[in-house]
Image (cartoon, rainbow, N blue to C red; front, top):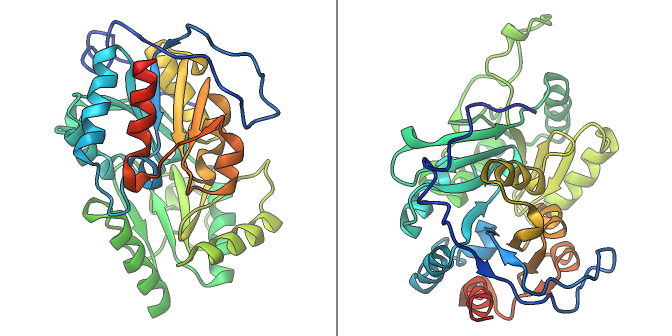
Length: 330
């Protein structure tokens, strides 16, 4: 693991990191039998980590005004608001601007990047931590995609590229780009592979990615592709996540929990003082790692099992905001 740029001093992050702290009520009965059952009476809430799609965002990919107001109240109470998403930073930026807390901590690329993200000016971003994939694993994932005749999104910090080879793959990529939003468009290139018969790292057309995505087109297909990929790529080789209409590939040990730990280290916050919200397979590690965690009621079974509690309402009805209001009132 390596840090891309120096961690900012607390003065740099002052607006994103309040000086005071809110209070967390004692933990209620946990859904996680494997976790410690100790309550947290009077513990200090210092960090709120919120997944984006399916959790903070409504089904139409917007944040309601009520949720924005609640996040600002959380910030005013003294806790740090952190977004934790599989999205690249570029597709989170407009939401950070809408929330309006200045630069905020962000875990991007499903944990492969932890940073302080400025919603209005990328030049003010500060990258705390990045984790890129090895060339060997990249080659193996590309082989899997080629065998399945599916397109790959090659995710770099500032741009994503793809090299679809037929009409089917082009259509899948177009559909995926439409889901991600206008900032997430994938650049089409000739190839993702190095020059033939060359072992030189310079022969690769792009730097190592933070993650790779195989686009499948449907959740059921994503689960099947993930199962097939695991037959070739062991857990010690690659972290594989079945997502909405795609499968994500990262290095082993890279997930939202690892990214959140990197952000917490930069902020001086332990995950035991963090409340997390999520809904999907890629949230499981984060939900398990944090001191208190909530799954969305309409989330994946894996997320619900990993969380301490289930939100009383879903993302269509500001479920995250309602739980945060309860915490603030506690």
